[in-house]
Length: 162
Image (cartoon, rainbow, N blue to C red; front, top):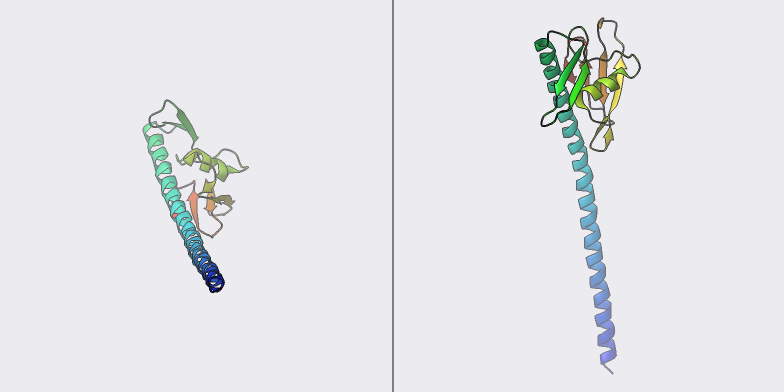
């Protein structure tokens, strides 16, 4: 008759041990999810800074090619390891620009980086800021949801991170 209580006690102990394991796993999952989301923001920020640096480099490469090609209205670049040529519109100062007034900053992004307006999983917003001090160009601001941004001035070719 003593076997029945032992079996019940073992069963209760097994259920308690199982619940403890489930609670520990749930706590560990919560910690991993928190770490993942905190790192995702850092990854997005780092990737956006990298895009700004790539944008700056490409703008300077295009300007250098414009100078070497005797200042044409369109700079033609060859892609590495490919026969594909990129035609990039530049203004009279040799900086990447768009001849269209509608969505000009989007077009500048596409000409320069040739990738969608996106970094990791965040959309990049491209807006043109109107300033009276800029006579022969435009000021484009590229930003992501957390407020991080960089500006591009098509009159000077300057890229400034904010």
